[in-house]
Amino acid sequence: MFDSIRNHKKYLMGFLMILIIPAFVLFGVEGYSRFNEGGEVVATVDGQEITKLEWDRAHQNESQRLREAMPALDARLLDSEAARYATLERLVRQRVLATAAQKLNLYTSDRRLAQDLQANETIASLRRPDGTLDVDAYRTLLGRQGLTPEMYEAQVRADLSQRQVVQAIQGTSFATTALANVSLNAFFERREVRVAQFLAQDFAARVTPTEAEIEAFYNSNAPLFQAPEQVDVEYLVLDAAALEQSVVLAEADVRAYYDQNASRLSGSEERRASHILLTVPQGASDADKAAVRERAAALLEQVKGAPKTFADVARAESQDPGSAPGGGDLDFFARGAMVKSFEDAAYALQKGDISDLVETEFGFHIIQLTDIKAPPLKSFEEMRVEIEKDLKRQQAQRLFAESAEAFSNLVYEQPDSLQPAVARFKLNLQEAKGLTRQPAQEAGVLANPSLLEAIFSPESIERKRNTEAIETGSGQLTSARVVLHSPARTLPLAEVRGSVQGRLVAQRSAEMAREEGERKLEAWKAGGDTAGLAAAVTISRDNPQGVLPQVLAAALSADPKALPAWVGVSLGGQGHAVVRVDKVLPREAGDEQRLAQEVQQYTQWWSAAEGQAYYDMLKERFKVRILVPEPADAPVLTR
Image (cartoon, rainbow, N blue to C red; front, side):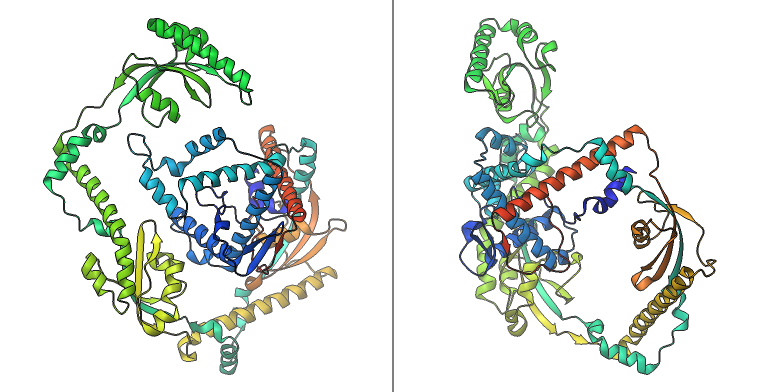
């Protein structure tokens, strides 16, 4: 039943959660305002304009992030009007929350910012095996988004401040059990029904369209029978993976790399330490924090004067309940297991040394290094394959960085052929035939929206020029050239006659099923023989008994005041259904654990609804105006 709540919560909450995308952290929209260079205004927030240029860049950035995170995602979904409108709504939301945070004087401290940066998985992935941050990779990652480290930190700080705006409401929201049960009882109400289905497929044999009808249907629905615009292209991909094949390593370089990195390549060194922790309560005043520091300093002086008493002092004074009983022992740990400041201090010590005071978000630590466990060194031959792989990857990345600009210039300066780039960079010229504007995701780099836009531009189609070098992935540039262009065309009737007849038969069959269903409904309402109805079955949202969703929704929406209640249900192209509701039954009793889970889920929905209501109020207060029409299939924005 708990799963059913999640599956049907749109009925309870009144809004549909279609698209939830995390707050923009590494790749957010905060900072796009620096690109505000004028142009068509698409929205205003508190008198501040959002231009189409900002919107386009925000959507391009977000689409790229989603493609990198979910390579199997259909690129066509990201190019839809609904997806673009959702990006605009999120851009507006970000501006609303930024304005509210500023007016409410909500600020993110350096300590809170540091905690978020340390917990960020994207940044953590850039750490080297020894635990240090690869600063060049970090700057490159941010640079692809047009950010510097300073801009990024300011962006994260602003995002954290904005989260506080709605969290102030959602974090204090609650729903009583009694209120939750009123809604849940109605939500899980059961109904005893009898259903008759009139399926289009059962009427197909009665439809025998004439040649004239087939031709008329074809002429009236020509867009359904078009072959899309297609191109045959040749293209080049420049990335580190392609360049890696051309790297030739010198034996001396491989040997030198081993000599310099043998200990790191053999495995991570582990350290064992004990610590004494004096905690600082969250929100403590400067005076209280200073008092804790003073007490920690006194303990530091004590254990430095008598290092052998460290374990006894830890048992008596440490406020870490996990390690204090064991004399502060933390066992062995590798880099990345502890918070950064603690780890740096521990790895700077020699065996037996005691650190100075180390401050973390937990409080003040005194650390004693008790042991070091280094893995045995592997031989050169054992490490050769891994070393060569590392070196080739590094050199390929360096070659890509050196070659990217030259590649871009070459395909632009010699636009009539990709062969000069093939010769210079030793790349494989690839081909694709029958490429459309909406290719399958399996098309790889050719599914990239920016590249497709360039391929199908007049410059490429009419003049057969190389596209510019376009970034189609992280550290990847692609240039393509149209070899053959085939415009969209309506296929001749003789070629698509089977498809035309099939569509016409399906349409007529669905109409006949609907007409029969409506006729039967009127007869049954008038007291006719109900033998055509299926046997009675009890259905509910958590136990639909296999009935179609449209039938379930209609049965649960029928007016229970006058039973039996009759409802006709359109099944679209599948046909028609008639439902008779005979009884309304209460919700089934459940065990306490399940009921508690349902109440908890309901409370979360209630919290989300209050947060959305508060956001709607902020939109009204800041006079938000979205100046572009909302697509018919645009999702409801919820966060």
